[in-house]
Length: 157
Image (cartoon, rainbow, N blue to C red):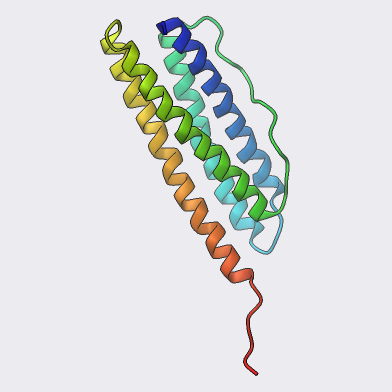
């Protein structure tokens, strides 16, 4: 793999980050239910984090003289039930962790020809992995909490 080929892959990662930004913004408004207002704030904050990711990818691509960085999101599922939104969000973030772990391996292959660039990009991708992994953990706890509190209470005889 060449650095140019890696930048093409990185541009695809940027498209995914645009998608995440749009997903969280959309679902901040679409979420319904008893605690919708609190989750609107949660998803709005998540969108702010994704905006930082988009900016980071754009900065890296422009800094590496990539000609035409992606300018928008891919399609995503639209739902309004909290559990469905969280499930989709967890899947998006899990995919990031999987994909970006693969990017670290790909960068290892490029390190011989581009040691400084790949070292820098590895740190960048490691930060992305950490953010997404922590987001997954948080949302899994929310799903577990929601499931426990929505189950019908058992009554004694």
